[in-house]
Image 1 (cartoon, rainbow, N blue to C red):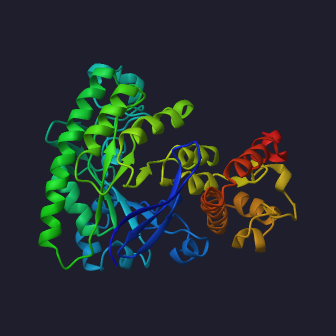
Image 2: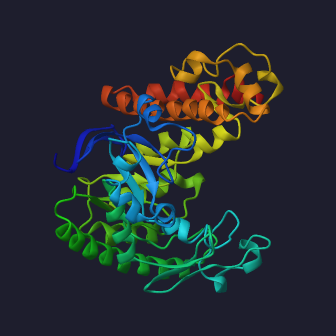
Length: 406
């Protein structure tokens, strides 16, 4: 099977489109939501269950797999898909975000240069700065055992080739909205230089490993919330020999659609665009109609483990007293295994009792809800009924009984 991307249809008066990504392990109909299996597993959910709920691909993280179990074990196990019993397409992100966050000890934000921010504002209590960036790459300390490691553009490509995902990402410097404009420019320059180095190493490895399935390499667009920087980054990365692009970095949710639009306007139409780390329902509408083709996010499973469940009438916590003894499913309109077979009352009990079945059942529901939502967005785009669907769906989600209860 060849690899590539084809645009199938366009959404009138928007940048949105439907398409088809072809990989050695199957096709992905876009827009599509890609569940995150950080360490080669979607937390608490069997790969077979992830397939049954309709996921077309999964995304794992190069940083985590590099540290544990190690790329040599995954490669010896037949590559990521075979290793985790996932026969469909796979993605790996470059590890850049994790290298610069988990290995650093920051709070919920990132800062690469203490000269541009107040150190005490970004480092969590009791933590030290454990990652240091320079023009060649990043030196970091493992969050697992404190061992020291070095990631460069070349190392990231070697790691991702060994892992063997169908779609991989170039190594970039991930910044935050706390960084100054001047530092955003420095990070953009580094990311542009690293992008070309990633391409060169990717091409070398593709030739050296000609017996392996062909991998698609996506470049990453930075630039924070600055229009000129986002457009400049998109033009510079867009002119390089990438198979597709990731829209990442510091994203302001309030202007998410505008930022995506700036980037999409500068990127080549014939290549796919992945929106990194976006998965909340309303954000998926914004991303799809502004030209994003695929999305990944840990939100569905992370929220599920914390008892926050998604329904067509809004989001609610099954841990609340409302669900105690409630014989209704999470969502009457959901066809997932959990909603068909289990009541809110049972889920409430399982959560309160700290039973391991709870994160499994809750995650299956949130994943199915999110995957199905993007499937519906794609289907209505193709049918010409997207705007009516969006109006009805958003109205129910934001004003339904669960939304009002919040």
